[in-house]
Image 1 (cartoon, rainbow, N blue to C red):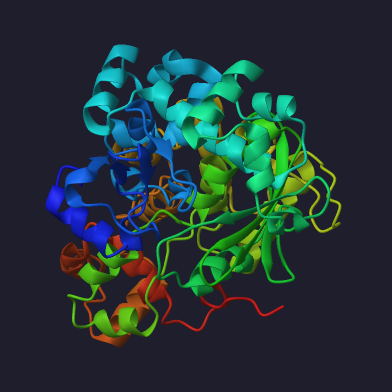
Image 2: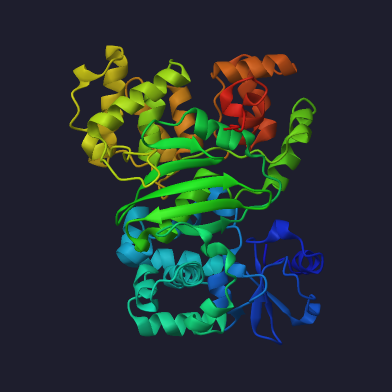
Length: 490
């Protein structure tokens, strides 16, 4: 979008928050870059320049605005919507792969050479993988400087910087302030969290309907791993350097995030996973605008706009839970998952006492005895087949995976039918166009609305909802009186 100068100027002049994260406005006279909704008086059009990423603006010599904090904008919805190389690379960079494994590690996960990755990212985003990772490190550093009392040296290494000198130079360059001055300017409000807990605000594009989003997560919560408590969805997180516990609460203009980590180097990745689980980078205006074009779906959208797709923090975990949930009730699926957690999950300490385990990894589950599973023999075989594929690396479901290849690999496994494939594509792979036409709840909702209710006819009709069919599923599911569609009240 940054190449459409006229449209960008209109968005800046109207302070349109819908475009935050889509592009960044650089002001040539002040050498500052902003988000489109910046509250200051807009500059003259001739003094504006537009960049596709914060990293590109930083590389061009612009520093972040202190008023609108452009580095904290919602992410571009393109990286969830698209499935091409650049989108996959951006999802992996957000997950911290470049900081942990370098550009060669990023390239290896994507199956391309480092030079190809660099060339494509530069062509589309104006910055290579190292610059994009540097911009993310700067944002992580700012969060830690402003919301904790940690020494600057600890923050530097937790944010992923190789040295304190590099940390100081980057913060000064990006924010035009020394780290100590940045801390002094911070408002005292965010430091009200319990000791050892980071209090963060996760932004999103309006509107956001939390009912089915948090309702689904709470209703399907696995005991010991997840819970709903005091208006917050809490869960444990298995992360590259350690583990964490997060509490997420919906607010009118943000998601309140309370995050406890055993290793602060996991901060950026933990935030990225929480944003992905809650689908916070979605563009509800685009989604709802298209779905309203169907007269039968329009009343549902108008009644409760802004529905998101509840996703996951761990794709492998969700694949296991999807198989456990085949042809059983929500309660039965939770029971099966809880047994696996108790038998194979790693125990952790929770100061609040409600959580006790991490969901077991595929490697840990590979050691389970199929005969110990209280389920039909065919489903045992399906579960062990999925676990074996994940543990061996033959089945890739992570944020950088190729969605169509993953679908094909899943479909090859015995007992993994179209419903399971599309559920995993929707919630684990993050495909916004995933669709489950054989789902009984979906077919019942379609029949009530006068839509086709046979799978083949429903698939044909759903073409008008593409590329947002996963969101259409949420609106249709929401017509049913089920706990997954209601925000818990206690």
